[in-house]
Image 1 (cartoon, rainbow, N blue to C red):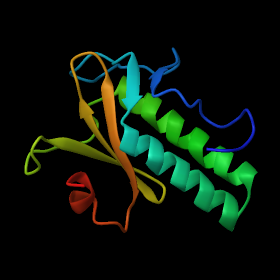
Image 2: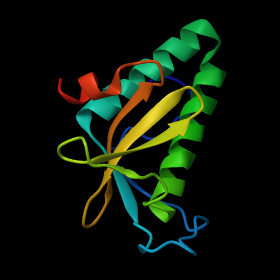
Image 3: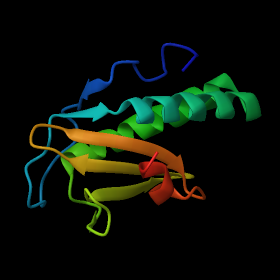
Length: 127
């Protein structure tokens, strides 16, 4: 991911901010999310495509929005239903034109992939 300081950090482990609340959810909030190597590559590709099509500023803003959505998922990890037909099960949460594929682990939220909503996400999980 290229761009200004506004782009998300390159670290694969991010702490969630204190502004996200876990009220009214059966599970306690999760303190951090971790990006899989595939999710890191996905985010880099999203940034590159968005910057080429629109601008670096737009790419930075889109990735900031994804990061904010990751934080919301930490606060409400069970917001998306578990897809038990996949082994191991995953959860899907939309963000604009993309799907965030994640799992709830014991101590973190595992972001598995971030794919365009027109992609065949089930096939991508088997790569």
